[in-house]
Length: 281
Ligand SMILES: C[S@@+](CC[C@H](N)C(=O)[O-])C[C@H]1O[C@@H](n2cnc3c(N)ncnc32)[C@H](O)[C@@H]1O
Image (cartoon, rainbow, N blue to C red; front, side, top):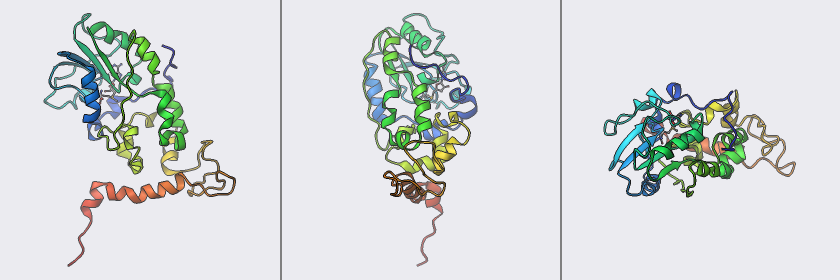
């Protein structure tokens, strides 16, 4: 696999420490699940690796779930099978043990993605279904491209390239899956049409990208403090721009949009709405 190795100084999210509360924001999106289940074909026995709390796990087939984090295993709902404590890189199954294997939004967390993919291929008789992000497409998301260059750079390094995943499986078909604008699974991209969500620490807390950033970077991105981004020259801590796109015009992006998001955020958050008093009659 030719993707860059994970940066040893900034390891992936420690799900033992940070996985608690995952299911509050991260749940199966039925429209994405439909793609996954279609790809599983007519498999009757399915291995789910990096299964977490069970998102996207089929309920109409026999499932074996593998999940290394006890914190994540504990969040599996009672209707799903308990998960076995193991890792993708060393699956405790015989060759060709299951009809199909799946790995949802997890390959970028594996210490050795290539070894893990080989293991999935070894134990599955037919489809191996991987749901992941295309590192090459990440820059199309406005959050990364316009406002969070550090996030974009780190995420590009973190995700194995699609071509490498295909090669690691010994050949596969890649299918682009659209993210619905009201996606239930709180990945970063789920909020492309709800930008004010990024101001909510609980939303960011359910996304593994943020803790990987250097000191102060998350705060800088969220508060709109001076950016190191070449795309936001001259942006000041007060949210106005000393240097606009043509050298004099005010910044038309982050500072203005962020003010809009802050106005939108309370209207969307449940607690604020719940405590609003009725007008006296
Ligand atoms: C973003 S969560 C995804 C969980 C679930 N598949 C879902 O879609 O909600 C990533 C999961 O990968 C697991 N993981 C991390 N390293 C792993 C490894 N080497 N082998 C298998 N799973 C791993 C984590 O513990 C975590 O539960």
